[in-house]
Length: 348
Image (tube, rainbow, N blue to C red; front, side):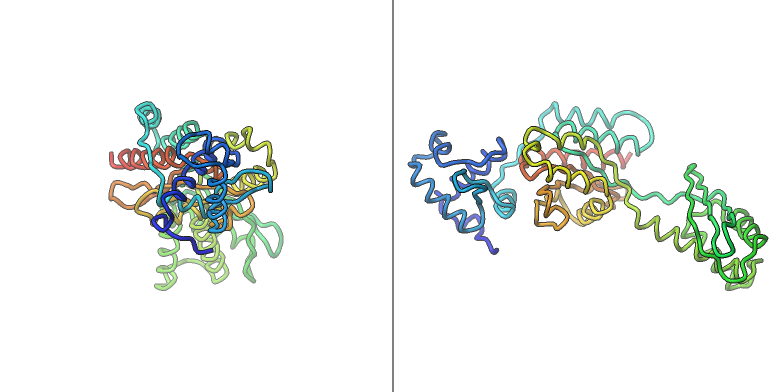
């Protein structure tokens, strides 16, 4: 549904809409006309407020969950509020200190990313997310173990201690001695290289006929390197902290929604793809509810911001995920500050 820009709403409609949204984000409950009139923020009768709320509902900005209940903002209404009406508040000194203190400890950058995620989770009462820069491990050792005449177990050991196993279909003519030869060749010739570098070296040696391998071994190694490289590029590296924060008093009323959200977080891959889309943003990006098909069932929002490496290029994304009833004015600047802090850390 096309929605009028904020400036096309009347002053009265803007005022009522703002009060409804801010009250809803604070309480999580639908807001009635009597509640608004008692706030004393505007000199309108409950009947006049109801008429305005009805107009806003017809515009698709508000919805009534029950016929006798008050109104709550739709996802479209929240988008209008976030983009055109929200007055963001800078993180407090205590919030900034809490984030920076988590990043001050020396150690691997992965520890700092995990700490930043935990800090965001605690401060926002959401689940904290951070998309970690993909780091291609350098290869240390390879081995193939025959499982049958058609299959073998391939084992890859990285110099970071990581171990990956997978079952591979063998080329025709592959023998047990050929498997051992392929593993020995890969360890001797390709150790110390990334998957991409290893594939390039092997293809070059095959082209120049310097690879001391038979056709079956060459096919097996090239296929294995290609599969590993493809999986490594597609595998999300996502850190999640504080998922338990999503199970609050408000969540108890809609356990199916919470269960759906937790399933989405557990899957990680779709969340990671969503965060990757925020890498192109120049500032903090907000994904609200059904705007993204991933959250059509859970009714969730993600606030995410990219952080940069020492060369200024985007290397990852940090953010939070929670119900659409988030304190956007407080959490958006907090996520932005965390991203800036991580960028400063990466520059050191």
